[in-house]
Length: 128
Image 1 (cartoon, helix red, strand yellow):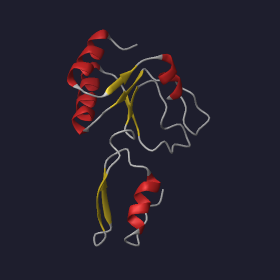
Image 2 (cartoon, helix red, strand yellow):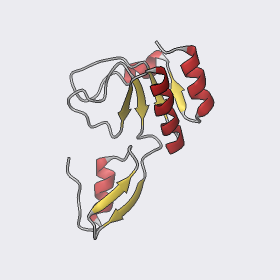
Image 3 (cartoon, rainbow, N blue to C red):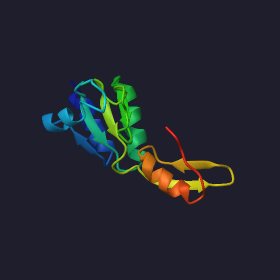
Image 4 (cartoon, helix red, strand yellow):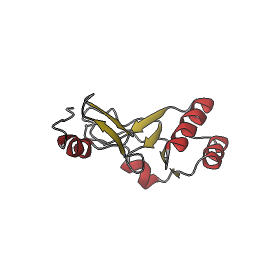
């Protein structure tokens, strides 16, 4: 259970979507694995500042966090009794692909197939 103080501080410090309803928590209780663990809540940061604030406030209150990106977990890494940070909704931009250095700079919610579509233009690919 999350304290009212934590919820208030997170909502005051961010613009992201904070959800504690049963439907959202149930939707985020599974991944592609056999596990089902209902999270404490789901937070969907709208920008990097929201993400930073959520991490700092969660640490202050001792709330475990569990970041979720592209949803490709096959072994239960994306479920837990934590505050889920849903990163694929808004933090999903490919910021740069440097073909010469063979690197990519991306936000944490980038989907692998989207990155590979861009990287393929340079003859590159990123494997799992």
